[in-house]
Image (cartoon, rainbow, N blue to C red; front, side, top):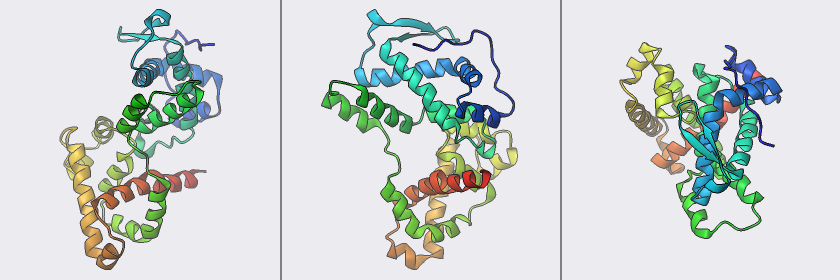
Length: 267
């Protein structure tokens, strides 16, 4: 049965961590509030995921959902079940919300829902539910566009240089570290919005507009690379470090290692 949405306007509690905890625990009121607040985003992503797989929406069997901006999204059975999957997925991901660097729950969950990895998880789930095989051309098209998550092998490779890499990262300033710690969580606009209330950070990072976010990341990645060469020249050659390995190591450290350490310290 497709879930009913509340009709009244709902505000997330000022305590985002409490709201995330309630969602994580499956609190019915929190789940209803979540759907009221994020239904537009959920329906949009659900229809986008299904269209990407099927390349069409069955309008004869779909019903129109009108979002808060007045746009219509057509919802058929696959879109509806994907919506339910996204609600359940969001509940699980809310368990990991820690409000890193002051990011709101709304910013966090929107970033998660729009991340390529969510598309990967949904595709695997959808494929497992189908009685018929998805055509190879569609399968290849989806897999080509999806950015692959960091692999277990990448994590194992990082473990070999972890102690050295952490020392290299210690050469980054506080503002640079904060920037790198949220780069894999948020998109450029969200990163800009996160730092914009703090002019000192904006000045230190040289962020004047959203496009500068990409320039900052490129600059910091290069800085880490150069510092690795300077501080550990022997290990740099021994482990065949290159720019791609630096990029992967940054992803592993900030998305897996540092995040896990933060979560562990909060338990």
